[in-house]
Amino acid sequence: MTTSWPERVRLPRGRHTHAVGYAAGLADRVTACARNAEPGDFLDDDSPVTCPACQRATEK
Image: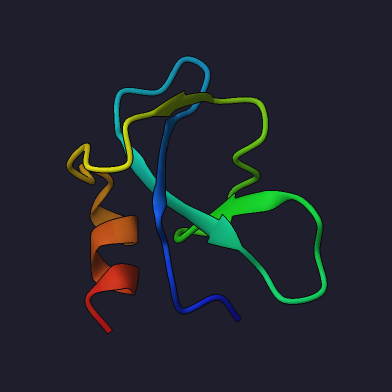
């Protein structure tokens, strides 16, 4: 599992900003809350994470 979440994304029709990284063995980027990040709009890497599930996952 990815331990680093360096990127940020807002998914289509979403209102939260998610933390994004690469899962081991997968080429696609995924969010910390286990969603496919590829269809989203990528934001600045220092954008605050507003997804509650991503916040919990990145605090570990």
